[in-house]
Image 1 (cartoon, rainbow, N blue to C red):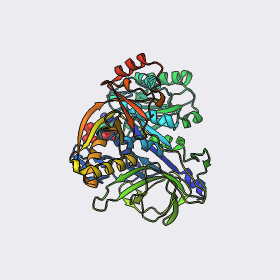
Image 2 (image 1 turned 90 degrees about the horizontal axis):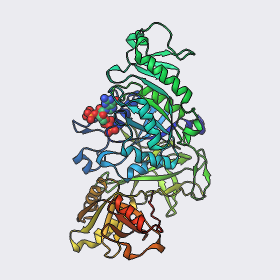
Image 3 (image 1 turned 180 degrees about the vertical axis):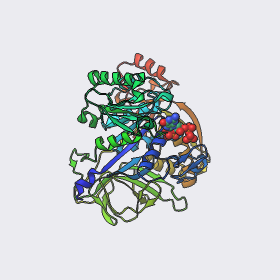
Image 4 (image 1 turned 45 degrees about the vertical axis):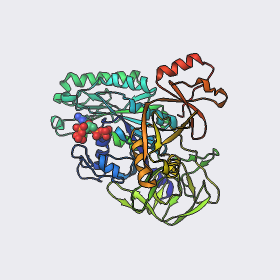
Length: 523
Ligand code: G4P
């Protein structure tokens, strides 16, 4: 297969959702259909505390959760799929957001009993910022949930995206008959035994199933037909170009738990989700995916995989060329030449040495401290630099100080390195130069504390400040008198002035008082 054809088989995506919407369950289904696991339900047993994938950090074992995004590579039909996990729950962190910089599409799983929840919205916004396609799966149709029309209009209103309904549920919960599939022009039945064992029945030109089947007498079927007719007439047009820009999201219904509708969804997803495309560099030049030169960027660093060796893995999203073991690359930031001989790729259940990876693939480089998040590597003579990864506005803050003043040096060194690595954000109070840590998820603090002790032998005292709203201002607007207990004035690590507001009320109060001052966020 030539390189371009091979790249077309790659689908690199993340699943975004609010905790408990069914991300893990749908991932398991995908692993099951791809043959990577023999039984759905084996990857994670939250209740039994088993977690099969990663036990990289002791903290993970203690808490029975996965700390950082993991990567999985599986085969689905002719496709080579790379799934990048976006940790939720307590393990939500900046890594969750950064992961989305390395994917070409996102699957958004929504609990149909709940609709759009806060974390889904945040993750959606990061995807929307990148303009990547988003495919929506309305999950848990085996339970009674909200009205489908209600869910779709909420999706459009709350997220500001157009929806295109690919299939429509015929009932739900105990009365879930199946899917009226507008895209495939068929009906998919939850009880094929009621239709001579057929899972799928084609629709005729009038949009009806032909033949004499009991389910056709149900008002649920006629209602679905009517809804479908309405969607055909009044709904959005399917426009693949709008899908690929993230402006139109194809919407599917189903149940990850029973598996119903999941394969239908995945089949459409691999058909419509884009394969890796040319990436734009910092200088606004396009690097073709089939370039002779290997290029890629580091979107995540996983430290402490083996505490005895202090090893780290840098996760590289390959953007062009072919990776083969022993390839020489230049690290753009330092211009250092590095031979990539010690690498890994992440299969569903094992880690293997990477032997052949191309655009869209993600490989892990064993790192002894060379790499930073956002670094570009390239194998050619011409320098390539991909744009820096965005920083995200933290929402949680914590004052931090060394426990033992005699260990100031290791405290400062540790903080500096962990901040540089992107593990956490650092602020200093304007007047007193106290250290404040900022994070998007609570776990970042715990990982920070743990790593500072394990890796730098520095113990810290942390004082929670709770939730704050960080807003940056221009240097010229800076006036120390603006600071109060409700809007603590700080500087970020690049010395830019930033207010940490107590709450939304304090932000609005400030805006009213100082309409001339522009307040900005990182993202
Ligand atoms: P997450 O990764 O998005 O956090 O969600 P996860 O897949 O772990 O699912 C959260 C809970 O919702 C699980 O139940 C799971 O079994 C259930 N679930 C997922 N998909 C469906 C579905 O299509 N229908 C129904 N009825 N339930 C679904 P749990 O009891 O909290 O956890 P577990 O210990 O059984 O895994």
